[in-house]
Image (cartoon, rainbow over all chains, first blue to last red; front, top):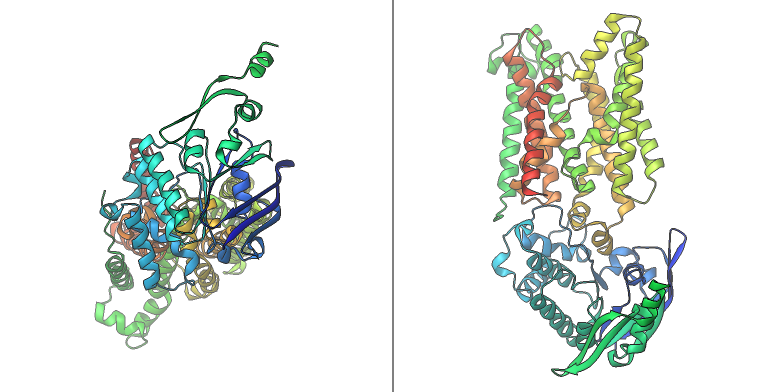
Length: 265
Length: 333
């Protein structure tokens, strides 16, 4: 049983402690949602796990300390989907997806059969085969997002970290993406994604980690984390929480009474 | 927009064009020598004067065209890839300006009149100093913006110092010589220039050509590149040192030749499917093709007037720059 264990992770950016002693355990086949207000430290938490910002604490996958690995080795365990969908040049869809194979082959080596198969599988899975020769810069936002997900899939890692993958997508793409993450987890991967849509988080994630001011405010099953009390404390909003179509609906409807008083005071 | 890359065929065509232009460059000059005679003379057989012209004048000129052109094209492609900015070029990081300052000091102090290689050596020293400052300022964080800003500051300072030297020059001839040198040219260079340049050029190329995969990964941004195992500090060192060594040596020998490093990667990007790693060798060949053509052109258009190479590349390059800005404005990139 693979387990990703993040213990007591802290990260400091320009003298400010942005992530402070956050721990998370995610088992094989799980999809964890990372939620919390803007500036709660979600992105920095993910970036710190990936070694993109200096951090203290331990990140273990099946007991292997990932932070002690060389970056290229770590890249075979962890794939990262950042919030920015930046692609600098008008490369073809296929070429961008194939970039995901970089951590797997030696410098100057030609792509192996395995590399080609992984690229092909990622293209097929994201329904991009018809686009393979198109320039990524000519695609719509949703299509471009699919290309970048395919790139991360081609990396064939047991763990996928996604930073606000739902941002800027229409409802159809959002639901398709959550379904994909569920499927990836069902295949035995560990998926951790930060998001702001609480209903989608509640309906699709197994567990939620709620961050506030760099601390873990709550962690557990969605119905336990997303309570009216917590939402008021952390997001300072009043929320409608109900059940419909076989799942939770969490819809913020106004600023909390506490917040209103602060504003008036 | 469909991309079907024919990059192998493109590379072969560029290499063939490069070879043809190199041979053409060898056979063009004021001395009237037949093509077959000139090639024989190149290898030391035939008339003594002809052998001298071929081996001491035309061969170094053609070789320098090849080396300088390839350097400018390669470093332009590498810097555009590293900085993820289509407007980047070798002059941007302050190496050309600092090399120019070194050369200008050599001319001003009269050292270049005493010792032929004083000029390229001081120019190289200038380039190395620029890199030292750049590395100290930009540090190890590998952030492109720091490199650009430091490069602009170095360029401005070196430019101001060059102006000061011109300003203080008591001798109008020295000032004219400085001006002409700064326009960039391959005229009157000799084999020692080639030998002086070669080790730095070779080392610089080696560093830049190792960037390929990292530049591909960087197309998706520094975070994704780092998450795929790319060491951003190493990428910065390779890009900055490689550019400094090769462009420093090129400027030391040929003066400041602008726009080649900017234009060539742009022209060739569509041919290689915009993939930065494939653009590196293509741009090196393309830079050589462009500079050899320009150097042939200055000899053909006005054989008696010695039009400077840098003037010609700027006259062709500046309108291209306008077009570039215009098309980027239209596509909103």
